[in-house]
Image 1 (cartoon, helix red, strand yellow):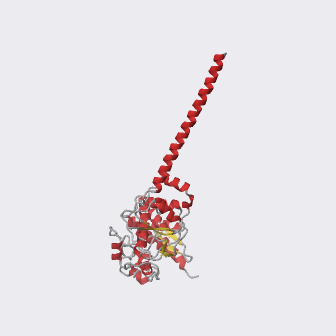
Image 2 (cartoon, rainbow, N blue to C red; image 1 turned 135 degrees about the vertical axis):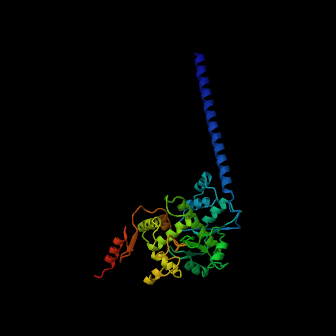
Image 3 (cartoon, one colour; image 1 turned 120 degrees about the horizontal axis):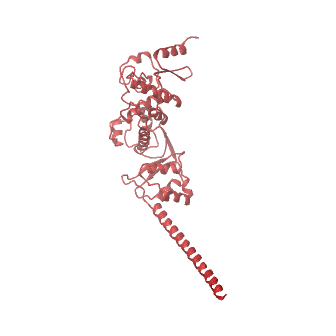
Length: 352
């Protein structure tokens, strides 16, 4: 009986020792985990952002952007590496999720924690807005841009040869249609070049993404031809649904080697005036943008296309339409052949 009691007693003692060991092991694991996490968080917070090729980089945060949008964009530009530890850093410091729309200057010696604090700062400098309107021509925009009183002007931006050189553009595609239509916020004495770089880079990133995911078997030879098509779509309609139909008409005509016969291209070729009235005499006027005379796409974009127009140019619907005309309310009517097109025009404009 004594032996049994001793055995039970020893079992109790051993079980307590095992529990203590397990508890100690768990505490040790937790300690190591916390220590490792704290070390990784410290390393992440003190990692330098990657802008070694710049003395400083002007970065614009728009009012509608979230911290996640900003971090995704910075990762796309290889400025940061968005990872689990950065995510955890934001969870531990939720104030950093509240960012201020502004233009910020990022420097090579800046750490991620300093950048997040900069984006979050409460004291904001006076901001000004620069708007590139959807459908606006580059020439028209640059005239406004060049006279903005709050920018620091370092060169004549209306000189397109000089502008191309300043932006260090290596390809030979025209500049029309290559700046993103948006509202850009900046502070006084932001340089003209910094703002134009942001506008060009934004459009370039957008176009490359859309171009990569474009529909197969489109009759484009390069991404700029897609921009040209998008710029025509932009001027022909503001209706998103109609953009995809007009895109299909452009594709159908290009594939059939038909003249595009787009009124907006003629107006652009007439001293870059896309908003003037189209007179019948202009249809026969010889110029490289007159798609009633030339075959194929015009030599450049004719406006600044919106993202919706770019998407329509990259993803036209499947249709047999070849013609379209606007009714008196501005809505377009689409036809598959010229006979039906003529009847539609006659019906719209008949006298009552």
